[in-house]
Image 1 (cartoon, chains in turn brown, green):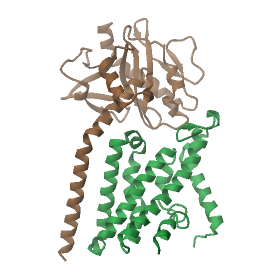
Image 2 (image 1 turned 180 degrees about the vertical axis):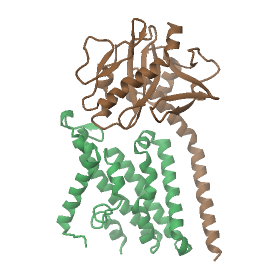
Image 3 (image 1 turned 90 degrees about the horizontal axis):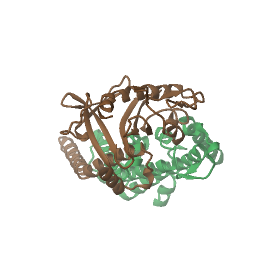
Image 4 (image 1 turned 90 degrees about the vertical axis):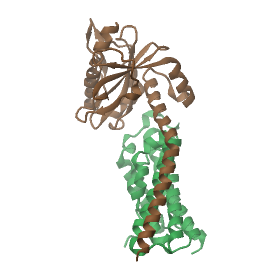
Length: 234
Length: 197
């Protein structure tokens, strides 16, 4: 029965044709969504209430206030590249994301001139998963924390997942990552044990010690990648 | 069977989840919030109804030796289509539902209805059967999601109705769905006094 082969061939070709048309015609909208989503995540690090923004106003805010920069590992701004040229590679062991263009490693930076903040991506392992987020510091002294946000993780709901809650993130605001010219980052201590007067410690989440420790360690690691840039521009 | 009966039957008496216990995996995964459950319901209903209609339209031409392959092609085309549309127009929800939309392909309800019903019946009643089964699945999804969202987050469709300190973390996790689903199946079977043979 050669009918069978003709039948399956027709069905397959029709289906794949249909899907390619759909995929191609929706591609632009989807790419736009991904881009807007990224912008939303960046903006939520500096405490902007993104719920009150629609897609257009996010685009507008971004183009008016945010400078996206690419720097090399020595802390020099690379004018010839934009953040979209960088390819993200995640290290599966520790969740560190590295950015490459033609085998060379770079780092992305967002500058918000309205809120006077510098925003960098952070990522690293918690208990179950890699946490992805953004960290914002003051543009003048590169030390005072303006905010932190996490937009993607798979930590335990109610425990580790509290990292994406306001109460936890608000603990960071106003803290300092530099002590006497040394990068000390922010330590996430045991819940309730943080020294209230310390500028370098915040309370962790009770029942989520490993997630809290993870945040501590990858925050330090990711901030130290930018140390050379901070030094050059301070 | 009349069209009305074809439509009503899978909603209650022959419900794919509570009676046939199909599609449990996604019923556990996407019932954390009502919004997700609603979108999943719409997506699955569309896929079952359309795949039923298309398979029924082709039923006289499909060689029986390759019928499962043909059904699978029809179903996965529709699912990929829905996935693309959600990505373009409901990006936030499509992010939350993630792989579960793509996994509609493996949902036993879709394949089961295509092979068991659409291969023997005309286009119109196949379409209605698909609608009924999709909505039957969805109604249970929405009931489970309502309990889980209200007890777990204290909200309904993101409106706060219970104070936050009453939130029960268990409801957000998979065991919460198992418990609620079990209670619903128990409740329905004690009324209809249906016993598994």
